[in-house]
Length: 115
Image (cartoon, rainbow, N blue to C red; front, top):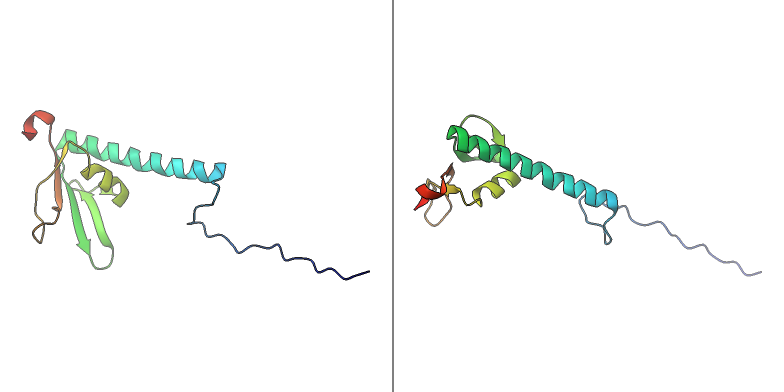
């Protein structure tokens, strides 16, 4: 009887940060929860900016990197800040360190006051 070698069927471990070639239900649920969490944070910050007049500020730090905060002290994640600054009611107030760069301070403006 000939000797048959068993093939090694073990696969390399998959990093949690990679997307599976065919997304699993669990992967899609985690991704959807993350998107929902970021959108809730963005809408919460937008409402605070609308009601209280708080501004969104970007601070560049050596240790912590870039930090987004509202002027009332509430921290905003980078993902939520990106959504916020692309919202049509959020305006760039300038304040960039160099020309031709986006500002570091953003305010809420009603539609009629933007003209």
